[in-house]
Length: 242
Image 1 (cartoon, rainbow, N blue to C red):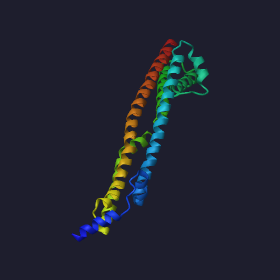
Image 2 (image 1 turned 180 degrees about the horizontal axis):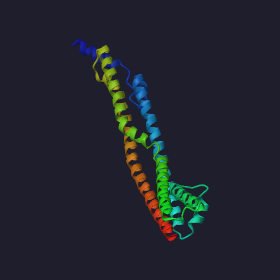
Image 3 (image 1 turned 45 degrees about the vertical axis):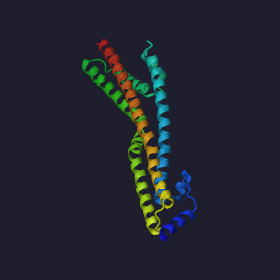
Image 4 (image 1 turned 120 degrees about the vertical axis):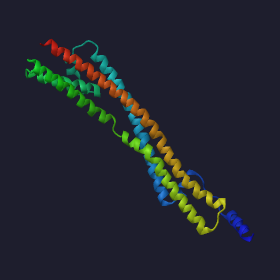
């Protein structure tokens, strides 16, 4: 009975714990603090990537639409090439420029004289367009791996901080021989805070990765469609030279 009264008096004499977010961070163990900082940095960097990718995809789609309007306007492809050759503004223009360069190089060397040479040129143009498409999409998809990594790993990193914090809380409880809620709650709260940060970092990263991957897939399909259409146009012109 006396020990129970002493524990209650000890709990009542303790200053109230600071359970604010900043207070939980300051009270945490050094390992838990490192986990929290890593998760916060990962979250900030994820949001930076999300905004950058979203704005970049919007620009790419706008420029692709503008280029398609110029391409299908009925004007000369040679004039369009001369206009965008120096500085292609988007991946679609880069694919067009790569194919036209190969076309002009072969035409200037007189490699359009036979059926075999024309077939070889058509294969080279298609290969050049595919290589350019792959290179441009690789640039567009940069840092997407980071979003996927944060989305899959952040909850486990936060769980590690939680487990570590709870272990320290139990050790402190055993050392103080006091199991009152006032003693237990702060340690458990700061440990669970790490898991909460892990979820805060992971959930937006997963949602953004799925959305951006879908948008990038649609954009890649648009480039592949343009490559196929442009390849068909060049093939038709090669047939007319027979």
